[in-house]
Image (tube, rainbow, N blue to C red; front, side, top):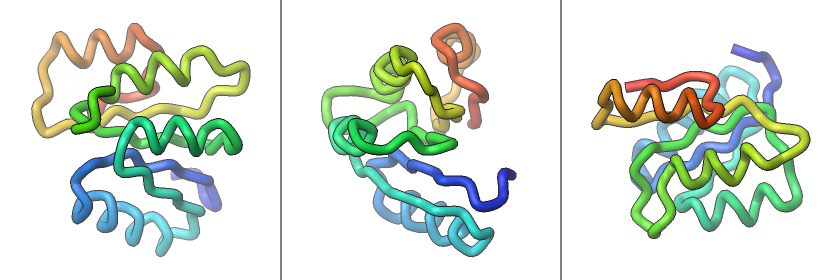
Length: 105
């Protein structure tokens, strides 16, 4: 874990997002939570966190892979960790090919 890292959590499940944020803040990280890909993209217009933790399935029309593709175009890219409760080998391979640093199930 990068101490004092700035982290963007992108998770549409409020309890999951808030639990992760609480844990990471207790570890000394600066945390911003976005509950949709659209909210995350808006945040990323003005900030570049060190790490993005994004759920694969987001309920607003753009999923975690769409967000990953958006981030891939940045000149300064954060490390992106894709998270999912519905992991498949195909999704993991695709996420890594698109530039994810890690894929967590």
